[in-house]
Length: 210
Image 1 (cartoon, helix red, strand yellow):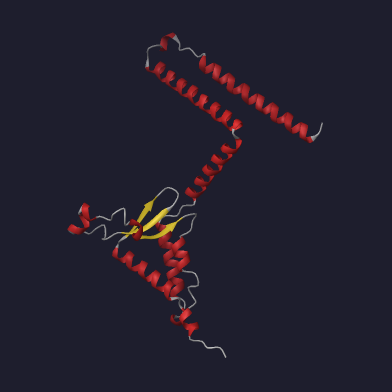
Image 2: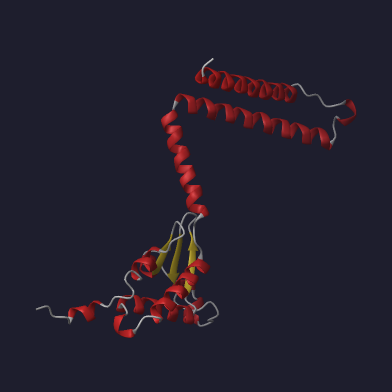
């Protein structure tokens, strides 16, 4: 017997055993009868409820399996999208991660001499630090991504402008308040701002070549 034949035989035996097992469980659940002393009690209603739940889920599982056999490309697409969403949700950063990355980049920028610091990187980390000092940094969890945005006032502020519902940030202009987007364990705006943080283009612009 070749390896391919043995593999097919093994799959056939396992699939047959699994089918027989599911069928036996289904028939036992379908033919289950409540003892006379339990009829009319809470246990009987509870047992019927779970019996119906099992039958419904079994029907759904059989329908999904049949649909996957008939439309394998669509089933593979759905499986890929589901796996991608699970992966993105698992590696979605939060605001603590954003603040940690901000502190790390701030330390890196401060360790570089002022003459060679990238002014864009330096201004960005200082501006975000000021926003944290004012208490206006907020987090918006969208399931697969995290958005860092800026509010008007600190949460502890009790001024009329801060608590009035008509003066809250509007949805139409919300995109202007977005500071960063976190996805796949990375903060994309912060990463782009910190690119070449130790290179000052102004310094090189004054260099003349003969």
